[in-house]
Length: 232
Image (cartoon, rainbow, N blue to C red; front, side):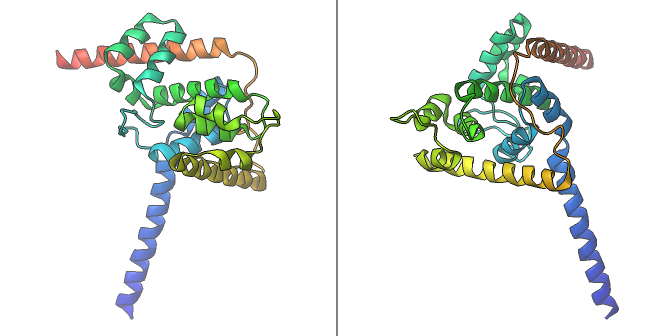
């Protein structure tokens, strides 16, 4: 009996420890997500849900088609982002070694948020915009536009749009993210903790984006300098 109690206590302790470790694992980048979502006027809960699906918060993951980091950003998207910042050092870094640049968690989240916002621009006034954004993130913006197209220009609901996705893997991807996102929003409403998690894309946010890019460049330069000093 005593042995049974000891085993039960150990199992319970292990389960509790595993739960808290998992919570820490899933939320250790929340500060970066909040900051970059604010810059690009996105809902951080949506960004968090995308990262959960893409990599389950593993910044070292490399995709089958060369996608890099937490949000599985492609080098092509990374170069587009760097070019838009107008900062030549970032462009040179992306051209020279995109994998190193995009492995930085906050930078990766920033580029992923930039791309999500870019997709959003095609669906700014469409209901259920999150479904279009996520579909475009996975399968490409042009496919999301195609799936949204109707003969009478009536905007599709979120459910109707998802039903029109003819790539099974993308439909499953979108469905999983939306289910997780809506559950998270519902939980926040029940707890009264919705304030601060809702973001709408309004204004151009250029000053904030330039500041974020400048911070990224400084961080990259500092990292390179520290590495060089260690080599010496």
